[in-house]
Length: 298
Image 1 (tube, rainbow, N blue to C red):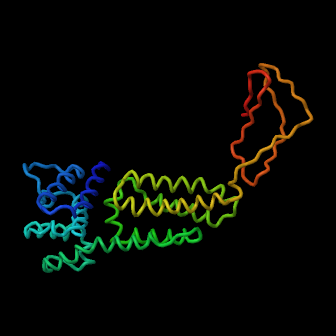
Image 2: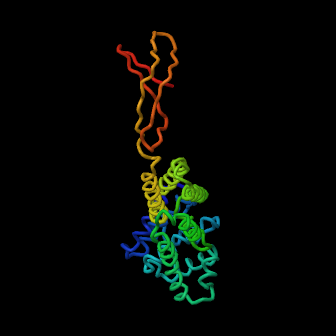
Image 3: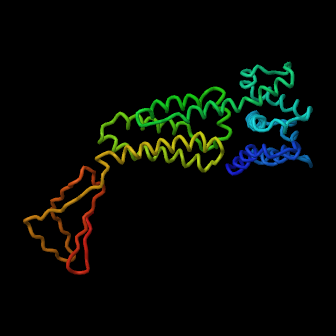
C-alpha cells in the first residue's frame, strides 16, 4: 500500500466539506481507494458503488468502511441517495461489527437513526483523543501522560480507526519503548539523565519522523504534535543539566619534553583538566608542530 496514496485519500476526506455533488465526490474517492487497496477492477464506470458492491477481503472492506465513516462525520450530505446509503450501511454491518454493536445499529434499525449515529461516531473519537493530547504536559507528568495517551489510542474503538490512517510504518512498540526510556530518564539522577538523553531523543525523533512522512491528519495531530512537545520538554530539561554544559578543557604543561622524529610512533602523556560541569565526550587532541605537519590523537 502506497503511503502517498493514503495521504491523497486522507486529504480528500478532509476536503469533503468543499463538495456538493455526491456522485462526483464518491467517484473521486473510489478512484483513489481502488489502486491503494490493489482492488481488481473491470467496470467501465467508477462510482460510489464501485467500492461496496463487490467481493473483497475483510481488511479492505474495513478500510473502506472507516473512510466512509469519516466522510459521514465531515459531510453526511455526500451520502444521500437511498440505494447507495443502504449499501454503505450494509457494509458497516458486515465489516465493522464492533462499531455497530457500540452504536446499537443493525439491519433492523431505521435508516435515519443509523445515519444519525454513524455521522457522530468519528467526531466523538477524535474529540476524545484531542482532549487527551491537549492536556498540559510538563516534565514531572510525562510518564503519567504516556499511560493515558497509550490508553486512549489503544481503546477498542479508537485503535482500529487510527490504524487505518497512521500509515503502515507506525509502530506502537516504538511508542512503548520511548515512554519506557523517558520514565528511566525522569527517575534518574543528573548523570543518568545525561546518558539516557540520546536514547530518548532518538526514539522520539524516530516516531516524529515516521508520522511526519505519513502526513495524514491523525499522524500529524495525534502523533507529531504530542511527541514533538515531549521532545521539547526533554531538551529543555537536558539543557539545564549541569552535565550537558559545554566542556572547558585546559591542557597543562608537563615537565617532560618530547622530541618528535618523523616516521616514529610517539606515546606522550598530557594533563588535561575540565573546568566545566559538562562532560567532554569524544575528546581528541591535535598537536601542531612548528613545521607544516600535525598529529591527531587516536
